[in-house]
Length: 325
Ligand SMILES: NC(=O)c1ccc[n+]([C@@H]2O[C@H](COP(=O)([O-])OP(=O)(O)OC[C@H]3O[C@@H](n4cnc5c(N)ncnc54)[C@H](OP(=O)(O)O)[C@@H]3O)[C@@H](O)[C@H]2O)c1
Image (cartoon, rainbow, N blue to C red; front, side, top):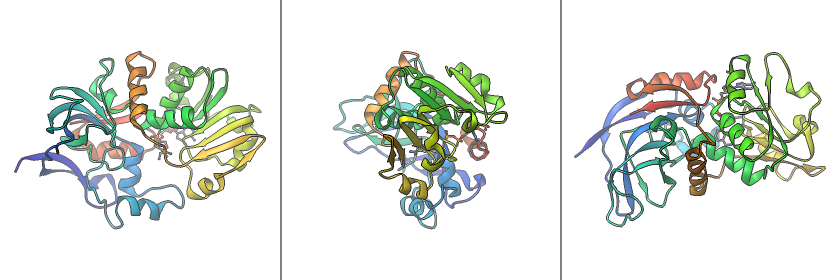
């Protein structure tokens, strides 16, 4: 039986619960490609699942999806960049040697040397403009930001957008995409990240350690909150008529109270992002054209993946934490 290295998390708990182990190497089915993973991210999603640190009211739901007493799939990791190692007999879109980006998202399994994916799943060719480390970080923040800003909020050129948490994986992607859509963007981050957020294209940067964006008297067409401090009740006054509040890290009470909420045409969107192949295709085109570039916080060697988890758990990462495999 062929074997491979994988990072396994057999119990919910601290970063040290993630250990490198030797497990069975998967073989591709007829409609699958087997990807030799070069890089993956430890995302805030991996941190949430590993530690069961979830927004208010989500604990039971997360256990139901990921496993009640321990992770059902002990191999975490939602996104990958690598090369196609082998293809099943029915595969037509990819061939061995192709450099690809894959986003299986929450069946996980990307913290390993190999992962099979159906050729019709969320896989796209890797744009040459991105190295494997950047390519591995294209999807988690990018697809979420694209779904919320473009598909739900329908952000238009000339509108104003406030990105709260502009230095994270979601925020740094949202900022670049909002600029691409022609919005005037204000980013909220700490002093340490002001330069980064400005370099990503923000028209205005608010350092939250010096200024409270809620007290500035400004209103926005779209507010994208990745920090989890906003609700329709607190942020509705900060929206222009017709404004959209996007709650990326909301707990169940906010999500429930968001359903159908409307005032002066103001709306609120919350809940898990929809992730599609079209999102990957769009992100990869934008990356290829130099319009979107994933931000990398730190790159860890695979054997140091527990340290990568600890870095994500600090909640201070800038963009994405990457592991090379
Ligand atoms: N709804 C969905 O489908 C979906 C999908 C993916 C992720 N999420 C959620 O989105 C959230 C963001 O994830 P992420 O991976 O981008 O990053 P993250 O690790 O949650 O955020 C890290 C960043 O947030 C900044 N930050 C922390 N407190 C802040 C504050 N009060 N104001 C402004 N910035 C602040 C930090 O910068 P400083 O060090 O400068 O403070 C750091 O750069 C997570 O809660 C995640 O679970 C939701």
